[in-house]
Length: 242
Figure 1 (cartoon, one colour):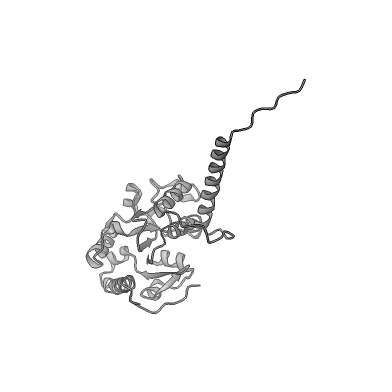
Figure 2: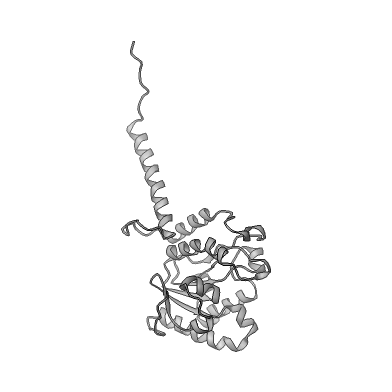
């Protein structure tokens, strides 16, 4: 007596399983590309920025990759228009940001909003704002190299997802992380550099301006160069990052 074998899946079910497999593979490929994993072809069509950011945020999860997780209240991922031409990158969340889960909402954030809306004549919501680290360092200290290393791949993935035309690096921590340099921000500011082909304008952090009113004029000079770049005019010569 021969033993009957189980019925194989029908054509419709097989096609469904194949689609699910392909979707899973495509999702993983896209995330690896956003993280900069080498070896993938460049022919994969760009993913919708909003969908990409949502997936990156899901991958970040309730992150415990560094010790900042022990003291933070909320992760501050980033906010703004995923299809923006202009991205601002700061250092890390402060007390207000840690409480609200949004970047640049304290006094420094109000100043940044003023620069964007009253100076650049843009809406803050039309830009995208993120930080090098997503969790608040205790007592608002600068993040350590280990904390930056744990979080930076997610910022890189955000930038690749958004593909902005210009990045403004707010302060030394952001400029050093993006440009792989230890040069002082006073020397970097006002000079165009690049992060993987995207123009980067380093300038002083808004919190620095709250303590040093005279530096506002220098930041405005830098922002005018950004405005000129977005308008299609070269605002300053470019310098190569390491």
